[in-house]
Length: 337
Image 1 (tube, rainbow, N blue to C red):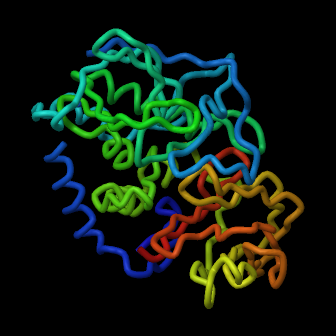
Image 2 (image 1 turned 180 degrees about the vertical axis):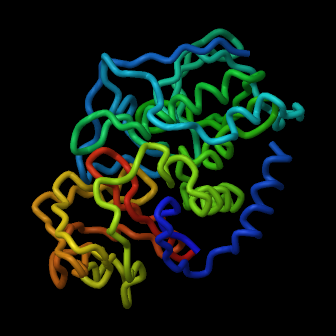
């Protein structure tokens, strides 16, 4: 079902819904479910998260990848949801939803708000992970800018409400946002500018991601231009190692395939999942024409060894991305689930 939509490369998916079922789930979720002045700014924070730092399932460090003097324009055309949101019929927000004022959109999945009582809060949106503003290898990414622009647009078309009571390790409020009762997280995923976290156990969100990928919307297509090399693919995978995965990390692996006729230097390229916790630089790796490289989680048995002490790829559903140095998705696959 899946691959890089813009190039027509497609990979099989194990036990995932059909596109028709995915779209049906998305449409059902959009019928469920949400005052504001918007400002988009850059903040003077660090350039990103070091590879291997565990930031948990909710995503990245506050302001990660945000830097000053940035061009706030999105490098590619935005997908339809932001425009379509202007014409949607408002619905009742979820029970307990609180009206908020948007003070600043930090990036594609975090923002600063004023709560109903006037108190400020930094919010990390639950269930999604947007492209980082800066690539691990350095440099601003079009996808990060586009995700922030999409979120800004979505939040500007109606009354914004928020649900959430828990805080993450960085003291950010973990919350779901709605505009006129419609879920913003689902709109971002449907536009192709956010990844659904499988751990959120939200089938509508996962289905929206499948549909966005299949259609090549946003980050999944050429919204930020073609990748640095368009002949790479994710081949065979073994997310579920024999026996206890934690004791058999050399048998958990993903294969990268060069289907082209020229070698590709993968320096600056990143192999990652849908979270921000698992992102691995492939510096020093070259993949020759027709070659398949096995990337193992552990320290033995592979062409590339990540050297991790804990499983990387989930047995319960996983998104695998190969991202070029500019932050463009070159190949992807959905596993299991």
